[in-house]
Image (tube, rainbow, N blue to C red; front, top):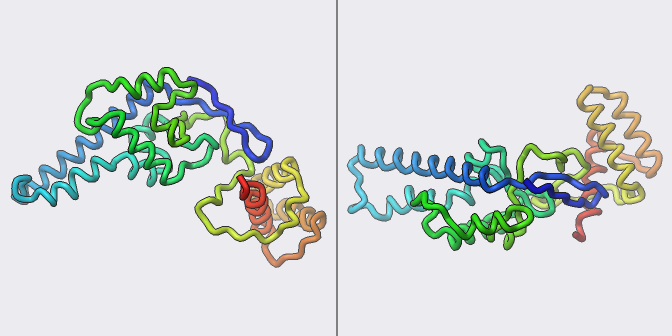
Length: 246
């Protein structure tokens, strides 16, 4: 597996391992089995209700064909880059910036999945195009990943975005409260996060209070927020101001 280093806005390189073709193939086979099981259960249920394909084509299209067709985007969006197969194999789809992919990125991957493997949800025949792409690209990406700007990684990764001060605010209309926070450096903010994590883990209110007081003193901030809420807010504010132009 290829090691991937993704630079963040906080002078920290995250290290991931890209998923090799074997793990991706096994994950796909598991997902194939899940789709097959779904088809059998629904078909048997409809048959027991005396509902048959020849007389209920629209019904079969809605509850059988569409869920199987849209299986990957539905699962990957709802499971944050995973499917049942990927979850079992400890794989996840992420963007090339290390963030959770956007809905449009998931849809691009899905569209190219159909182009690459037009019968992917009906057969187990090996597919040459994605296999060749995965084998020949540096980060084991198929064509859909290259176009969408995504990569499939092992979740047993060497570095985690959660271990940095990164907070994903892209899905919310976040409004920062303390613009003064930009007077601090990445190193300062990472220290604040480290101390806040320690305080929360140990339930050490005194430590949180001391850190909050120090930050307020340096930045000349007055607020009625609790100490932990204040520290969470300044971390979010720093993320907002650092990443809003990226």
